[in-house]
Picture 1 (cartoon, rainbow, N blue to C red):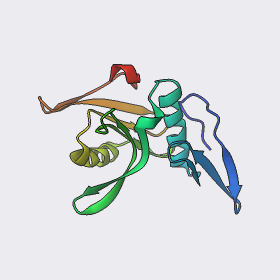
Picture 2 (cartoon, one colour; picture 1 turned 45 degrees about the vertical axis):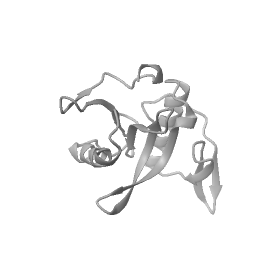
Picture 3 (cartoon, rainbow, N blue to C red; picture 1 turned 135 degrees about the vertical axis):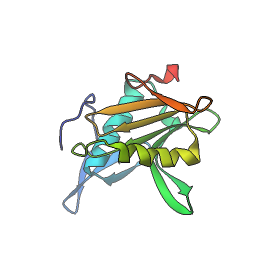
Length: 149
């Protein structure tokens, strides 16, 4: 797998039928280790271990209904009342983050209406804070610590 712009973390990786699987601590099961999953697992560990996000408030592969179709948000952070607070969209490290990626996460946000959107390919990370009152958003310098949300 390609190196990422994220801290190293210890991932549990096993081989099944000659293919790599990684343990997802949020879903509590092994999942296929794709390049996008490589980014997701590193980013989730970064949020929990370095930014103090409570693992119990994070969920991977969260289903939503958008225009009568089922979609999946890569990771969602919830507040202590169970309301979505942040959507995180991952791409493989070799995928360039373009407007199309932001359009995708914005469509998901039409359903969840969160305060923060993050997009990462493991090498570049973008975070914006939504300002619904003024109908705009602001890109942040980095990924905020949980205590500042």
